[in-house]
Each structure stands twice: as structure tokens, then as C-alpha cells.
Length: 592
Image (cartoon, rainbow, N blue to C red; front, side, top):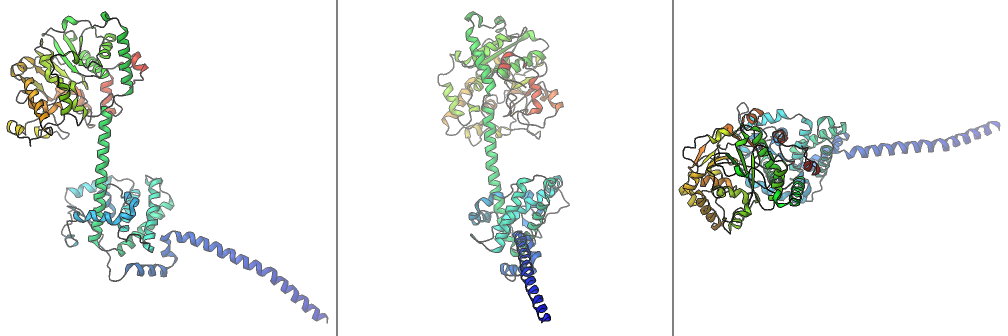
């Protein structure tokens, strides 16, 4: 009996233990499975891990996507004149834009492929014989220099991977949702996030490097899936064409914005002009006249002429010319402006009139001898660009009429700085010529020719002028006004203006420069190069030695020294002739 009770108690205890322990074991097992499955789901989200997760799944997906009878490609991408054997590096050079624009229009991928078709000029058969000789110079050495210059190689490889992935993605049919397409789209999104958050190799996290390796595996798989080199070439050419078109559009936009900035009038200069104008009209009429008027009409002095509506710029030209002159008592400056800026220009020199040189300010509205339709004609001819329709610029062709009492004048643009004494120009032998000027050079020291500025499709021009004639520069020109009057060159200028007005399209480009080449053709003597240095408004490669050697430096181009877009390296040569402590400059917030 006792033994039976003992057995019953053992059975009850065993059942109790079983009922308590078994739920604990089951719950623990469930929790372990749940944790394992969630980790696995996160693991599966990184599709690169599918290969490590199960070889069977990888083989099954490849068999489904690949088909049969396809071979691994040679990874060759044809260019117009070269063939690159390393797509990872060469695509970065071939496609300067990153190809990310294709992701914004995935539904039009087949349309993009169509752009590349007419660009295809070679076939896979020609790949081997068209390979470049990498031991020679030319394009291959150029790409070699670019590759060696790349410091952040991992970032470069990631961008190359994005380009390749976008190209492979375009092989998929529209609205395709197969396993590989989903994988590639996921890789692209991951790589784009990496590029967004990192611009240098040292900024890449460990996870970013893992994603880079995953993308590499996906691209290797894509090469096995799509071994058709000709089709891949077409796709890459399409992307290159699309990127080139986008780059051209962006360059055009940048050029337009730079030109727009060059034509704007800074707020500080407008404030200065308004303050000077207001101060001018507070003066009684008898105090609005500049002194030294008796020297204005003396032909034996050195007469300088500036056509400008910019008070700030004129101040620099005059200050620099006077401070560098060996005999400033012989200098007379004639500033020709319009009626709107005449009060401000006069007031500035009333406040800061030089003690030795004479200043003479003229308003073009007082020139009653100008043709009545002159302003409208100038604006009609240069309607495409306001810089070329400036009436003040065109007035230089009327110098003999503006100064009938003078025999010789030195014309200076308002964007120049005089660094050395210019007295030698007044003694220069003109050899019977009207104009003395310096030749224009390109950035590579090559000469500009008349063909660069004049349309020789116009038969009237083609019959009279040599297209190979070299171009000289406006900005610092010594003019013999007596010879000018004898040859009646102003009448010739007027005839060409009428010719351009009658023509449906202008035959001359870039405003007064080509007009000057035509009007003074065979009437110009060339000066030594050191008299006049151009390019400080567009060429950032000029050396300090070149600049300091020049007598006159010229900020021609869009980057004027009084604009924020100026080249900072050259601005000091301009600033040293300005007194920024002037109260009006301080009040208008004009500073270095």
C-alpha cells in the first residue's frame, strides 16, 4: 500500500514537472526561432548575402535568369577612337557625369537606348585590332594621368559601379520585376546613399564598404547575364550622349549666369552714384565746374580719353595714370559719359580733384552733331547682347568730332590699371598710321585672326579683307586724329553700321572690336606687347612677372575687379589705387 502511494506521488510530481518545464522549453524554443528568423530576414534584405545563405538558392536564381548558351563577356567598351580594357577606370573618364540622372526616369530606359544606336561605329569583331597602344602618348597617356591624379579611389569605384549598374538595368524589359532587377535596383539605392553621405574614402563606413563589395558581386552576375558587348556598347554610348547633352546645357546656363553677373550694377556702386548725384544738385551752379579748364584744349599736353558710366572704375584709371606718370602736370583726362551719370561723375572729381592733372567731364547728350537715329541704330545692331549695344563704346569712332581741337589722344577703357609712365607712347613714331595698338593673343600664345570675329560669308567683307589678318586690342590705343580726319574713317564706320542694319543678321560679332578691325584695317601700327596686357578678367593663369612687367593691365572679360565674380589673385592690382576710407565708400558699404 505504501509502495503504491509512493508511486502515485512520483507520478504526480513527474506530471507536475512536465507541465511546468515543458512550456518553458517550448517558449524558449519559440523565442530562439523568432530571433533567428528576424535576423535572417534582415540578412536576406542584403541580397548580396543570398550567396552565402544558400548555394542552392543562388544556382536556382541564376538558372532561371540566365538561360542557356550564354558566355561571359570580355568587358570591353568601345569609344569613338579608343577601346578601353578596364571598364572600372575608363568609364569614369568616358562618362564625366555620373549617370544618376537615369534613375529618375526608369520608365524611359528603352528610349535612352535609342539615342545610342546612331553613335555605334564599331563592332565586337574590331575590338582586338582597335585596342590602343598604352605605351604610346595621346589619349591613353591622358587617361593615365587622370587615373593617377585620383586620390579617393574607392569613391571613384563606387561611382563607376553606379554607371555600370544603370547601364545593366536598362537591359531589363520595362516594368520588369524579376529577382535580379530588384536586386540591382536595391544596390543602386544603397550606393546612392553612400555617395550622398561621403565624398572621400576616409568618410566611408564599414557598412558602405560591404555594400560596395555586394555591388561588385551583383555586377559580376550582371556580366554573366548580359554578355552581348555590342548591346552594352550601345547602352553606354546612349548614357554618354545623354550626359554630354546635360553637360552642354549646364555649361550654357553657367555662361549665361556669368554674363548676367558681368552686366549687373552692384548695389554699392548704385548707392555711390545716387549720393554723388544728390550732393551735386545741392551745389550752386557756379561751383559745379571743375578747375583747370584752360588746359583742356591745349594740344601739346597728353590727352587721355575714357568712355564710361562707372564712377568707381574711372577713379581707378585716373588715379593709376596720375600716380605712375613722370610729369602729371602734362596730363588731361577727358571722361565722356551719359546725362544720367554726368552729375555723379562730376561730383566725384569735385570732391577728389587731382592737384596736378586736369579733369574734363563731358555728357554725350551735348553732342548735337550726332545723327538723330544713332542711338537706335547702335541698339538695333547689338540687340543680342547689351554689352555690344553700348552707345558709349561706339562713340570712340567719333573721337575727331568730339575733340576737334586735339591732334592726338590716348584711349583707355574703364577696366584698365596703369602701372607705368605712358609718356613714351606720345613720342612713338606712328609711321603714317592712325591707330597704335597691341596684338591680341590666345591662352596658348596663338594669334587671333579676323575670321574669329567677322563673318566672311558676307561677300562684301570677303572681297575687301584678309581673313588671316591678325587682331589688335581695344583698351589702350594711341590715335592720330589728324590722319583720322584725312582718311575720313568715321564716315567708313557709319557706312558699316548701315550695312549691318540692312543685313538680316549682323556680319560682325563682339561689338566695337570687329568694327575697329574693319575701320582701321591697314591703318594700325603694332606696339610692343609689354605696353598692354590683356586677360585679367578671364585668364587665371597669368604670372605675377607678366603682370608687373606690363605698363597697362586690362581686366577684359566678364570678371571685372569691382564685381564679386572677379579673380581674387588680380584684385590687389586694382585695389591699391582706391581709398576705401572715403566717407561715401564707407556709407555705401564698398570695401576691399
